[in-house]
Length: 138
Picture 1 (cartoon, rainbow, N blue to C red):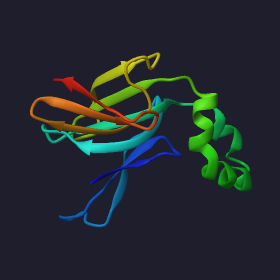
Picture 2 (picture 1 turned 135 degrees about the vertical axis):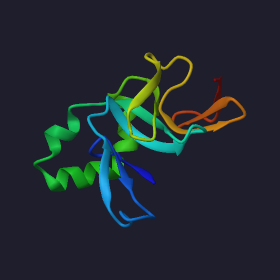
Picture 3 (picture 1 turned 180 degrees about the vertical axis):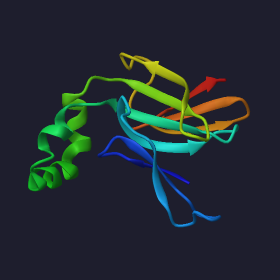
């Protein structure tokens, strides 16, 4: 199972079965954006959703636990004010390697992608900033 760790901008793999059951490891780190969702792809890999480009803000507030805690409660409301519109989804193979990246660098068509679902040769993209679902033919 893969889980996004938003604050650290990385993806963790948690083993549910087998000899490594209960172990957690870093699958992907140093992402170019803030991850918000991940879903299994039809090929056994993953679709990783990045809602906003990575900002220096987390590094600046890291030494201040109280500031981090306060920001965690209001960050979704503040992000549209401090981050430019941007859309990104990355296809990862089962080992966590990026094999394809789809970007809307100015967010004109789709931005703040938070969910991706692959079905019937299409990729359905949900977002935090709108009340619509984008559909991309694969």
